[in-house]
Amino acid sequence: MLTIVPTPIGNLKDITLRAIEILKQVNGIICEDTRRTSILLNHYEIKKPLLVLNDFNETKTFPQILQKLQANQHLALVSDAGTPLISDPGYKLVRACLEMNIKVDSLPGPVSPITALTLSGLPPDKFMFIGYLPEKTKALTDLLNKLKNFDQELPTTYIGFISPYKLIRTLTDIQAAYGDVEVCLAQELTKIYQSVKSQTLSQWLKDLENKGPKGEYIILWNLN
Image 1 (cartoon, rainbow, N blue to C red):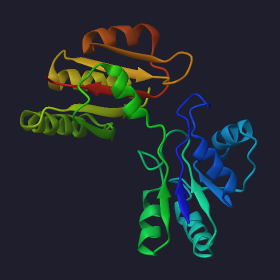
Image 2 (tube, helix red, strand yellow; image 1 turned 120 degrees about the vertical axis):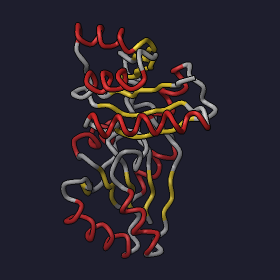
Image 3 (cartoon, rainbow, N blue to C red; image 1 turned 180 degrees about the vertical axis):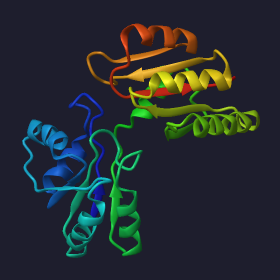
Image 4 (tube, helix red, strand yellow; image 1 turned 90 degrees about the vertical axis):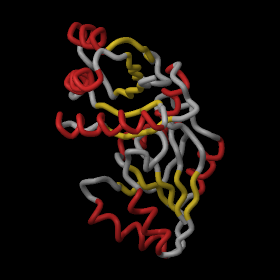
């Protein structure tokens, strides 16, 4: 059996009692990075074998994990932070398990896009999560234009991820496509220096030139 277990996105206390219970019960834990997962496990005094599954070793590790699951081992799937599969590894594993009639369960838990949405002040009744925004200007511009056309039919709040290295260029590209609209940037969610703030793109670019981007960002906008 495979159980998808969400883990905290920042504050280690943001984990459910059920998640801790499952992590203590399983035969092993599938993770992205043993160093990140070990911090959580050590905090809750959990000792389990760790199996690494990421984009770099998927071909090598995949058969080993499926073999264990077919042998009726109970494995947990975690990501570095938040709910697995949401812009994290695990989708192919879940698909394979379902095709092989291996039981899969998923626990509720932290999801950073939802946390950011509830803090943004933007309309939460309809939203679209678009994952990591394209890095190349043309690909991003094409996506933004498609979203703008879609928005004319169904006004929506959009949520995406941006790495700090691409943030300034991405905001510049969004400004070129949409004008000086207001966007919300969220970072360090649930941590000491949590920040969720909305302002115009020109103001963001001015601020970021002065202090520089740090950490992963969640961007949210609504064109209405």
